[in-house]
Image (cartoon, rainbow, N blue to C red; front, side):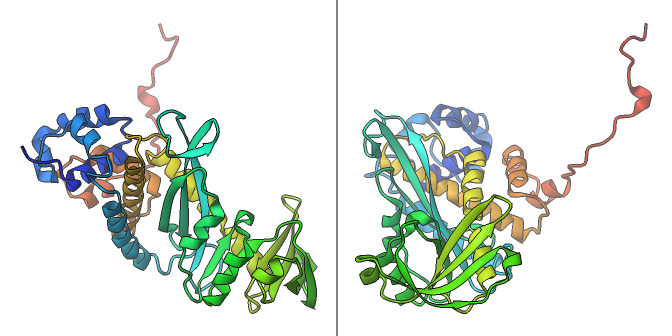
Length: 359
């Protein structure tokens, strides 16, 4: 009997992502309904729930092969979106790093310890803001603190990294400075420092101060011995005072505030994948099964982004996914399917409108 291959597992789970299948039986039923077309799509053995379930354990199909395949596609997507604007006039690469949590069943996911009576999985994502392309993804149990994932990053010289306040760990942040990479983050309330110099700011823009500082805390001064830039900004719309820290002293202070505001794109990315991809519930309970499903979901997301750019589609990724979900087994050229799309709402012909009380 022919063994269920990695390609078969990838195609099955990619189909599940594109059509938002809810479980293994759902995948099996829908694929078997198209039995005559499966061979031409690359499926070789018979698709069954048993085959899909047995492909999940780590000793059979390791998730790393799907992660490696995703990295190939990510590199292609980043080339296509190299000149994509992201709200700030800036030429250098800008990344946002953050994580999102997905709650899990207490008894089915013992490896994903979060709290004593709770399980969760965290998806840590380094997002290239040009095109919102996820360049690095790390899947961990909920017990892993976000700041520990900074050790996994390899800072890119000249690039900017936008980090939330939860990633403030000065020894790890100093590694970015040593690698000639730039960072923008928010200062903690109890950060102790001494002002060395200050620069004039236009208070009508929301800026309140722009200072060069040295950390004076017993631990922080040892972990980050270099100067830092401290920018105080007041957001009148939200009535919030924001304190930014950066190791870049050349940018305008307002540009630093604008860069941090662009970090919100990573939050929008998490919201998008949770709404339009199937990652809030998992087809398997092992760590390998969860990581496999997440990486295949990321692969589908990147494939759709590549499709949008290569075909020059003036459609959102959401609409592209919706169209693909209903034409996935069609034999017509994919560009033809999108060329017939029209989202304009036609007005009904008043001449054929029936009257409710016309007797």
